[in-house]
Amino acid sequence: MSTLHTINKSPYAHNALSSCLKVCAMNDGILLLEDGVFGALISAPGAQELQILIKHGANVFALVNDIKARGLEEKVAPDIKLIDYNTFVQLTLDHRCVQSWY
Image 1: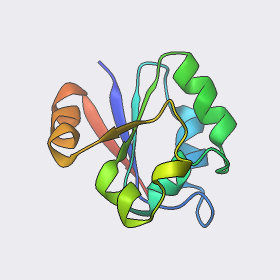
Image 2: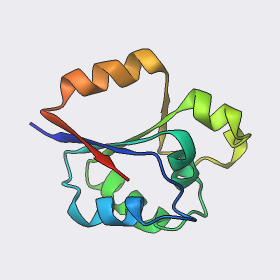
Image 3: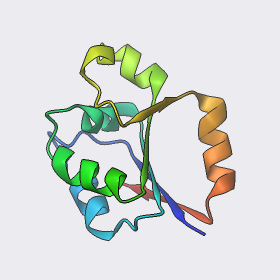
Image 4: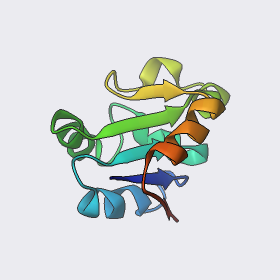
């Protein structure tokens, strides 16, 4: 079983995403929400590391409502899956544990 890592802080202002990437296993999931969705940008700090994890089997998700609220629809990396709240709940059930990064 895997861990779902949730990140709600912008990588431009906090190190939550970079800290998560250091311990994230290849079969884990990463969910970007609130200001954490800035980590979904193609040019975000940690974008290359995130792409490496994706290529090795990690799933990266971003809440579509938070993406839209910040006007980022056109700037999201193509390998990041946009999800709604119902899928967020399902992800918490599909993973062994949920780790929130602050």
